[in-house]
Length: 239
Ligand SMILES: NC(=O)c1ccc[n+]([C@@H]2O[C@H](COP(=O)([O-])OP(=O)(O)OC[C@H]3O[C@@H](n4cnc5c(N)ncnc54)[C@H](OP(=O)(O)O)[C@@H]3O)[C@@H](O)[C@H]2O)c1
Image 1 (cartoon, protein in one colour):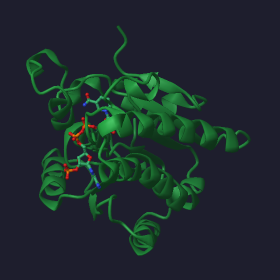
Image 2 (cartoon, helix red, strand yellow):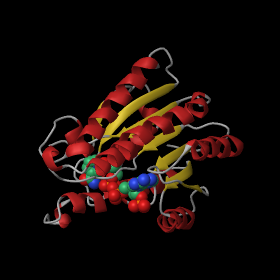
Image 3 (cartoon, protein in one colour):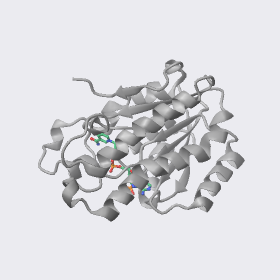
């Protein structure tokens, strides 16, 4: 389904991003694995190779610290190697604090907004020229249930996901007359990952789906089967 597409996944070293990257590669895509922890990215890389999928490339980048040179290097390396980008899964994210606004730590707020929202904006802006070169480009932002309804104690994480939904809608509207590129949000729902454990430490994680179990919509949105779907917010798990 994704044969010969070039796809960049952020947060490709763990959780949902890792599972999506491995699956996209298994479906024939050339993967750029972006993340902040080399050892995790190498595990994703090794699994892709051992599956016999196309050889990926690793892009080590900490989104909380990356500067203009890092973003320029990313687009330069991508342009040299592939020329264009067909898919971008903006998945990397952090939880921040679970705390009331009255006590929310200000530096944590700033960093959470930066990693979860501002870095998504910079990455998208940086990569747009490569995405414009694709015949059918798909950009997928990662949202959350608390990106649509504000809930107590979700602070900066919730605000960042509301912002992500807005960023996606704005980009979709700005490209209304350009059907070769589309922008959608995906909400994975509760999934057994490190972030979920951090948010719900007392929960029985065995009751949750694993990242590998929720990938249908990730594949569909990235593939040409979903051409024409644009500016939507898609839930992976509907009750
Ligand atoms: N799991 C859920 O139940 C759930 C529900 C709704 C939405 N989501 C969303 O789904 C996405 C994936 O979440 P997950 O549950 O898979 O989380 P996860 O297991 O914690 O994985 C997050 C990934 O993001 C990477 N990352 C974090 N900070 C980064 C930074 N500064 N620079 C680069 N990469 C960074 C991590 O890198 P390391 O390898 O260094 O850790 C990791 O690969 C997130 O956007 C999250 O908000 C998850």
